[in-house]
Image 1: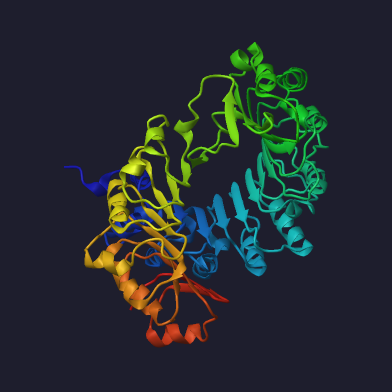
Image 2: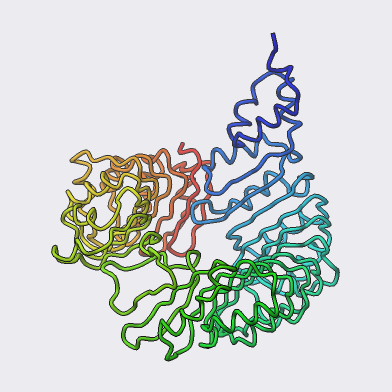
Length: 552
């Protein structure tokens, strides 16, 4: 009879590929030595620590071996403060010899960034590096150090960085790098480093207000996909220059304000045919300068066989009902509006070159008021709303059911008073809501009344109620109403209420707590009350962020 241990190691490794890291290490750690040996030989462990519970994080770091790790995802977000530093204190990246991919988000300390990058130096197998650190200022010394490390990563193929300044000091060619994303790219820095990356296939750049218009002054022969998200004015001359430098471009995504000439489909057709004949996919979202162009004048230029039959490109324009002119031109479906007001705004109307159901793609809706009964039947019912924001009183759930599919809602944002029975009925009818945000004081009835009525909503995993002070008795009520909360944002009067939060929400992964005034001696308070013993926290001015560990 075939025994489990007699299976080949390769079969075990294939099985391991389908298990998450915590379950894998937890299931095999107490088995016989042969199976433990097989587990230790597995070098494809993916560490995804995005919003993970602190106790699971600690367990994984305690039992995983450095050489087993193939990819790492770390994030110092609001619910997992100090995660990056904590991980590096437990597992030195320099010893992760088989590391191929690392993603770092919300890093907020320049010294920590330097330390992290130093541990990546000369990693022979690292193929993907993603560092997002928009909240910190990086000086020229750090820029040079990071660029030097990048030059020593011989297999680096995918790179995403927060600022183009990091690449400016490059002095050696990154031949293997083919995919580059820059979250904040300055025009005067772009040409300084692109010449050192000759084999780019994919380039995604974004710039901010006040910068210069995106221009390419380096010939990118191999570039096939270009994404430009610009907040700076663009002219058609700039587009022609970009196309001249990217003759083999196959995919272009353009989001920019610009001159009204960018609304001319005939001119786009001519320049694409002459400059980038291999272009297969073109999506755009253009906010033009003030113009006198009507919907017919614009859409007609995009109804030629080139657009409809060859490129399969459909476009739509948003027209001001006041001036009857275009304020936005975009391709559909990828760039159609996904958020809207209800009832629809009277200031703008959307027209497309083909028949298109825009309402089918609305996933965020804000309700300012409900239409009168006679008008409801004439309005199209929304099918795919994921986020619902309420700015008006709701007295009956039927008011919502007439205009949208409640089961598609996942996030409810409340800005105005909702009748208590209607609120509870809404959470029951829209049973896929897992995130609840209370924006203003008095938006919902007292939580204590919900607890008395024994309302329980286990589907709610995230609660954000920072705009109103939560009293001690309300914390107890919240724990009864939302027993499965994983993420919590509250405003407290007394730091003593932190104890209740830590003890009464057993599923809590992280919490963000605001105070009206600065709290003194927060570290002493945690130690004296033995709260979150192996957790992590960060306190700044009046905000406390906690990554929950063991309660006692």
